[in-house]
Length: 197
Image (cartoon, rainbow, N blue to C red; front, side, top):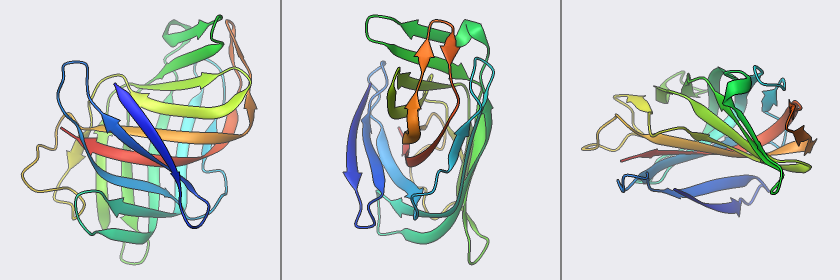
């Protein structure tokens, strides 16, 4: 279960904080948040059941949630996450909400000045969530499947790098249209939460 709390930074950037517990009651601890230092769109989804979700932030930040670490100038890149097809799409007419299962991928947060990888990993299937006619969307994982690559100055010692989680909340530049036949593409800006059990 995800409980989202959205905060706006001094730069006017929306950042998502999440308290997460998987359905089998394992507590999850947020270890870092990340976002863009600009308001430029950094997410692109090409639309449809097999569209590609791309997240690329050339000028972002990474802030530790378990220590004092802060990296103000990072690059955040996710490998393209591709929709698994019509079988992975659901539209709920009463609520006008939709979700699309996307394949897994990899992510990397790199210090732009030193080139050092601060946090990276891989994960299995994700779910893209939204509401017809709304600009607010989210990306969560089908299950807590993040495998973090360590060592990392942003990964807390003593915790397992396996079965971590991540979530992305974002606002599209225009409302997204969705129906039982599918949904359209969009561009958006985001906030990211990385977590572990």
